[in-house]
Length: 199
Image 1 (cartoon, rainbow, N blue to C red):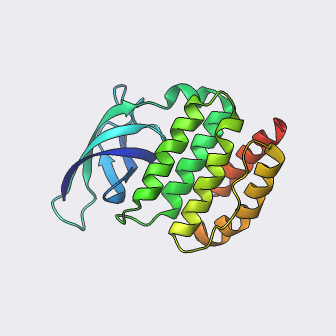
Image 2: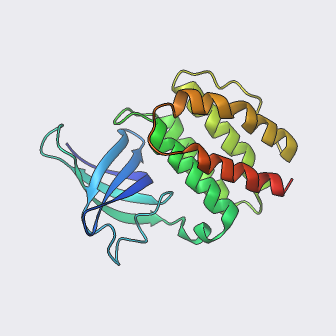
Image 3: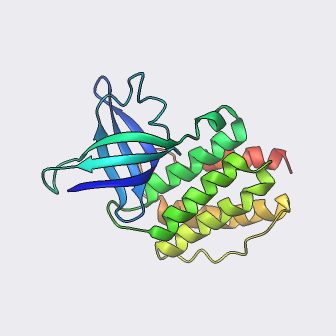
């Protein structure tokens, strides 16, 4: 395996003293886990943040080996991680993606939708500008993985958006996140509570 591609970094877990196991969502190769040497070092720490868009050079000697990756930052979501609402939305979208998608199976529509959602979270003037896209992303993920996800995508009205989120919550927990380690749904609950406060 040897590839060069842009990718959305959706998860990073510490490994050893300074390395990181990164999970990268690519358009053509799906979700790829890779070892990033020095990922917790001073130079790469700002690069290895969930939500960041990176240029990745990924290589492995065999299909059974965990690939190595070299990453270069293309677009940072770091500045928005200091704001509670955008940070919660980025954390939920990336955690859902990293936990629900199978490895190395391409989902080009989900890649494009996540990239657009992260851009909206970072550049919309308020949550009303991206909350509908978040509901749409959740529904799209349910559909792409074969679990329905037919829900009307409300625009603007926060009460309708929260109702749509509530309708998708149980299918996400039951189908997409069943059997995952850790409480990924806690990130969604935190985001929903923050959205409810601005209603």
